[in-house]
Image (cartoon, rainbow, N blue to C red; front, side, top):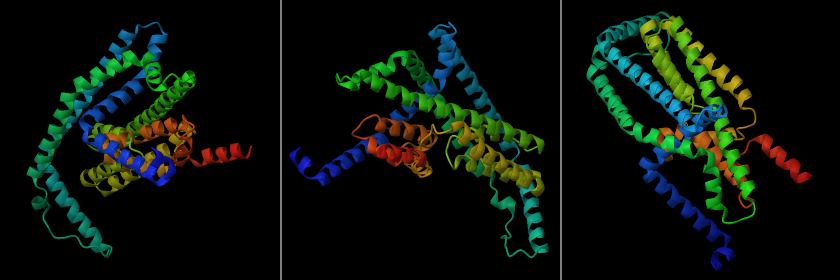
Length: 358
């Protein structure tokens, strides 16, 4: 302890080593941490609907039951849709091989006519497009899907218990970590701020993701692109991943449109997908978010990489809410508030400069 006081470098190294050990433990305990985080954020998303029903004299147990039924019905709908789409895709593999060969020949003719300096290897699509590879991919998807199904019961059970504890959980957490200090109400307020910020972010993000999925489905339906519902759901889910999620969702949509519908329809679909993502992601979403996010663009990108490395795909989906919670937690203590500035955006820095001048 005396060494830590005399040598700040020693204190930093010990704190850094403790952080590395903690992160290593979280990564090794991913099978426990990931379902817990999913349950926690599902409960947070459901809490406004639960609060809405309880304010209208609906008992808490009945409100949670209705919400649980809605989640199960939605999950079964998505599961049935994905399963039928995979079976339809598998049955259409021979047709896709022939269409791919035609598209490649058309592309070669176009390149030759316009003297474009691009060479396409003369390889038959029937040889390179192996149905067995597609079947292996389908089997892996179904296997991973079955693993998810096996954990759904425990996931929903944890969500139910979290929702039952939601009216008093923030007081319990504050009592556990308050240590008998006099600022109990202030810490409860900080914890409430964390939860409300995450609820607002997830609420706006869910609304914008739903708008993205619906508009993409309309565009695909206009140009008669197959599996429109599947691609709309994919766009909805991947839109939760900041910066790159909408790009990842758009790539297979455009590729399928180019392959099955032709180059003109494929280019039109590409323009439509880009326009939707630009409108929703760069205009509507920032306006609805306002200044509640409070995170710099660099921090959002780095948090995506960090949480994705630590927790996989779930970490990428929850990277912004987790970073927001960390920032607000740092702001709640006078000893760590200076570190919260590192995660903040430019307006917050200007506000802090103004406060210091005052």
